[in-house]
Image (cartoon, rainbow over all chains, first blue to last red; front, side, top):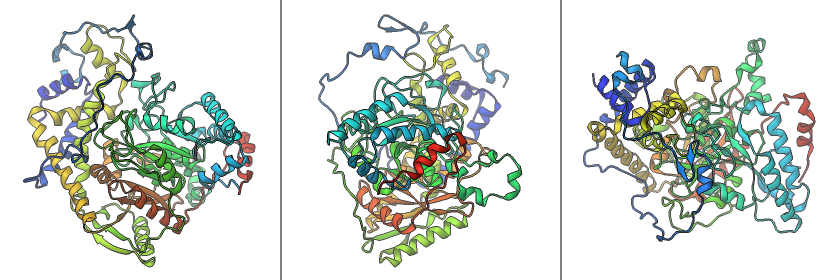
Length: 108
Length: 526
């Protein structure tokens, strides 16, 4: 049983997305099963490929300021703001532990 | 005659000669969008700004100074491209109400050429899906569902049911764009292609769907799914149009450092393409399980067409094809897990009312904003990226990716110019059938013939080939060498001329708009 409640809990905290219900957990199990087919392939001596353009250099532009001064534009789409700041709720408060969270996993 | 089958070149000529004005063209398209609303192809119609753009274009034509072939041409853009001042939703609650502060580079380029932006088209939520059925604005309907060709072939028994329930899907995830082009509401549309999302709906909707080489067209402003595979896609009614749009979009963008720095020269395709000196490869692994016998026959017929024209046609092998879907599954979910992390409600998009802590606000926002498919991929992706799984899944998939890319290198290295394959396993499924299986299953099935080209970053194009027994479009795919779009499209154009794919015969469904339709049909420009 590779997908333990601990792993599921850990994923919910990392992803900040919840499994919602048994179907969500089932979905993950099926996804893992599906991915396991990869192990049929012999990749001995094969280097991982990050990008098809690996033989080229990425373009780096000059470190000059060419645009900006669009504070009001950018703030337009934020729901909570004060002057030129985005407003966030208090930080450094960890997500409640499994037992205290509103999560389907509690039942497991 | 501006017969609706005509390509944009003819319309450009018509605009230049004053047979039609940009404003008239825009108005007609807007009217058609209204009368085909039931297709649900558009999420946002930017009527006011489109008419303004058309007005400006008209002024330029009057002065004899159009900006180019695209000036005054109505286009549509998939709703995962940022468009300044216009809502960009990705068909998700997460971005409902989000007004882009900037234009994606490809959008800016089109506007700089004078194109008229009619609106944003519908898609699967965040481009995840192969049906254009999983967005918050509902599914897109394939215009061919309402064609005489399809209705004639429908089982007479089913007429007793609500005729409306037999409609077929567009495919996805760029279904709205494909439907918009297919139903003549615009002359070209932008889609995106990560696993086949431009070519798949192009095949089902009977339009040309071009996936350019990775690195050719800027992704700046395209809300990303898989950074190492995403490309903007081009949907048009003919290959020449795709080449023209490509010409205005391709080239290095300093804002997207993954675009190659080689200079790009826009090209026109020869009037009479010659395929006699080509070596066409037929990858045997693309005879995938589930491939309909109809499409198999069509594929074979196409190979014969090339042979008879003097081309050399040989069977080739891409042995790792069967692993591309599994490989994609891991790489895609991993990149998605990372790309979707930006949606936290703080700077844009949906924000939950929860105020207890930043983390709980983020969690609630994402809980409320994303649908099951998106959440599922984020969770899977995070699983594959866990320390204990990273090597086993993510790195492993990256190795398999290299094997898939190498398969193509080997084949092209042996002298093959272009590969010829089917695009989809079958014609479009009725919506009722399609939703019987879940999104991941469908995507895995439907992407099988298109995904590998994204793995390898190669250019590929769907060309409509024929109508199926059910009266629905079926397309074939050409895959070319990296950055050899000119050769790829030349072959595609030759094939297009051979098959003479029929025009869609759309029945007017709204008697109130009968006049609009009639006007369209009778407008003539030679």
